[in-house]
Amino acid sequence: MEHELTATHWRGYAQPQFPQAAWSVDGNLLRAIATGPRLDLISRERFRDFVLCFDWRLPRGGSSAVAYRVAEEIGPAAHTGPAMQLLDDEHHQDGADALTSCGALYGLIAPWHDQRSSANAYHSSRIVVNGTLVEYWIDERQVLGCDLASEELVERIARSRFRDFAQFGKLREGHIVLQHRGTEAWFRRLRIELL
Image (cartoon, rainbow, N blue to C red; front, side):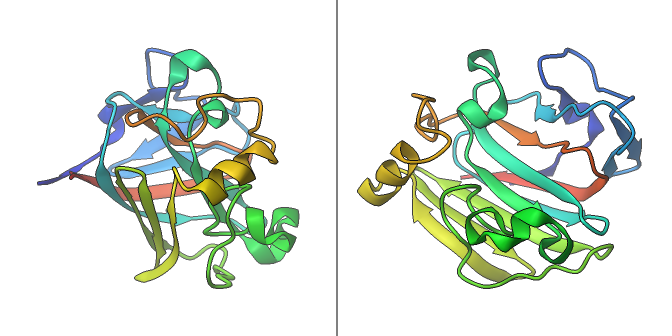
């Protein structure tokens, strides 16, 4: 059964409360405040296998990401949780590298299709995490699929910026994180279905 993830389901990373200086809430809309502290949102619950659906919007040059299976006690989200990159490719420097472009498994696997997502327009996304298998979807189109335990990905991690993080991509359960990267980012209609 699918259920909505409202503001009450989130708190600040390494904080007990919702970070009102960093994120605003308007009904089911969460917005990263560009002028606020760069503080990620982390789900209060941990999730194992799931389908996460959400709409997102970025300003011109905007950047964010959604990480999953994060272990907060180990350190920053990037130490454990793979992430789906959300980016205005056309106006952000990371868009020039396929591994950090919109829809990528951040820093590791490029999306199958060039997204060129429109700034200031809402896009729908879906992240499917089932065992070690992961799928990313944007606007009803699958843009990536991979096995987190595959030999190829393990080798890529060993050559990447994540190589020193022993638990990166290996946890079977963890938190979901909405990243604040210093630009506005809007998330709405966040829904999760457990598998």
